[in-house]
Length: 306
Length: 266
Image (tube, rainbow over all chains, first blue to last red):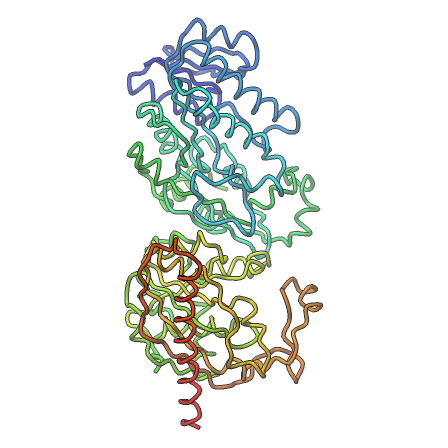
């Protein structure tokens, strides 16, 4: 099967590309970022999905399946640019897919869709509405991209659409939200809060996404692996030192003293958990993780010492 | 009689799916439970000298709901019920309460309630815990129950109905419990909502001696035989209210039994 990966320049997307290639699929990539050491048989088009040239890739290559991994969060892009990438980019993926005969689109979204707040339940299921936009408006465009993908389930019934809400990933690429949080020797946390975090080892996450390509489940699915564990435990088990800081002080430190300039709402995500129930995806695809949470942390401690 | 077995050993014997870090899928932590129950164990055994009657009525395994009355100006009752399940049951069980939403908003309160398995009171949490064959602790009087004044300490206020629908939907037995003595430990004469607002809680109970620190009153909890109702949870309110009244009446009997037993003992 010919599979086009949009956003192939990302670390996880590359792993998905390699896994699909290993499985015998013909893989092409599209990203405005280069993939310098891509295997020869994976053709990478350095094009922004929102530009006209991107449609030509769809027109010429006629992929059967498109995996959309070209969304960004508030850590990697800000303001209007982030909204343009997430919303206009997602729309372009579907417009081109519908126009050029794509049979299956996989949208790789995030479990942060559900939002973090004091009164949100543990183990979100797929039919829940997003509840985090009120306290973290910067999530809105990612939520909109997710819902746009979900809309296609009824707007384009001839196209099989799979929307994945993937938990955080942890692994050798040392990229992603959780890895960014664990970058330093000392990990600041909000004093008195220690939310559960759910993550998949990168290899498992990539395998989870390739299963969507192969099994073609139609619908919206949470993708998760091992049971969640507290963020403080994650930090300690990976060799970091937790520094609990009262919230009022932590807010003042954002953007100063080497702390990332995060939106205030991002603090909700290190106060309250976002934990999802992945049973529907397991039932639809047979997905199971191979690396449990304890082994994943041990491995990360080895590959990312401080 | 509460066992003298070390709390750490009892926590180790909890039949929960802890991982090798001692954390279960709901974030319950063996380390936090041990600290929590060491403190509560002292209060249970030495300070309040709690008597638990009918513990054998609580299923040893599988889903069940402990449903009781509030007694005392704050969740003293719940804390002692949790402790009785760990100290008195064989094998020990972790009862999981439905915490008031404000607790999860408070620093430290958020972390400790979560690590000790006391999740925010949401229907989703209650249903999931029961479907996972956990032991759920519910006080259908809600915050109005803890706000009872000293003069009303043996009474019951209105019960919510959600717990019966949940029991029917999940086919869970309801184990009624009557808690006695909390009103003597925290003799509330007034509830200050102004102080509560300042502290981020619904209200602060005021006692004749000012502070709401508990007196060393003798407490008791009586567990009744499980009640099992037939239905789907989708019945009309009139049917559900009938079941609620049945549970309420049973709890009132258990409170009375506890009161009589205390009088006889003294």
